Amino acid sequence: MKQKYKQLVYLCVIFIFTLAVISMCVFSYFALQKIQDLSKVTFEGIVIATNSEPINNANIKVEDKYTKSDYNGKYSISDLKWGWNQVTIEADNYVSFQTQVYLPFGKTSYQKTYLEGVNYTILKGSIISEDSNYLAQNIQNIVIKINSLAVPLNVDGTFETDKIAIQKVSILIQASFYEDFYRTIDLKSGVTDIGDIILTKKVIVQD
Image (cartoon, rainbow, N blue to C red; front, top):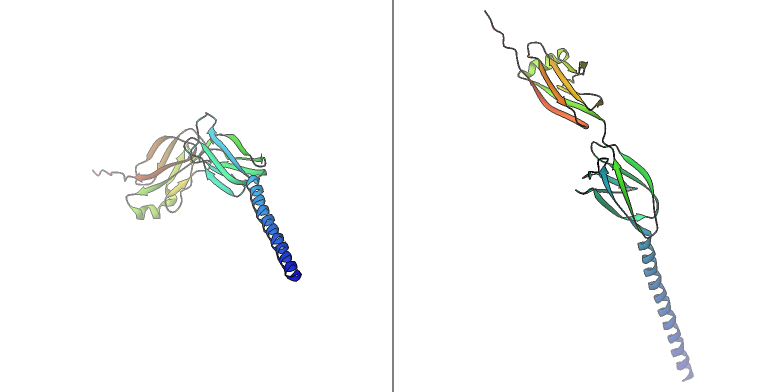
């Protein structure tokens, strides 16, 4: 009888000990999850131009996480590590922004970022002739000038300038047996693509 009683007590002790261990494991698991949740922070902000207009579709990178700003220039990135994080913000036709931001443990941080518009542009386009054979054979004889400065023409008829200041420019294209092409263009920041330019053959009047 005593032997059975001892066995029963022994089993109860083992059961209670096992239950305590399981409870501690469960508690530790949820405590660890809570700590991990608290260690993840959120970074929110707004991207606006220097004229206070919101910038839509800006690219925001915080360490290895990405997002884009919405129509109102707002964005939010979650599950970030607390501490110092590198933030990079880029948008078409604006100067890129990069900084280090300290994100406090278990909190949401907010930042307002102003981006400056770029003060230069790249002008590009392509030349099309009514006679493709002429264009291929005489590419070296076609002259393109932007404000009297020569611009090289690629073998496929495309051209692209280096960075030039945003301004109003004149484009002059000259080719043998073709009418001169002349146009004045207001450049915009980033890239100004004027598309295809069709050269027209000169009309030769014979007596």
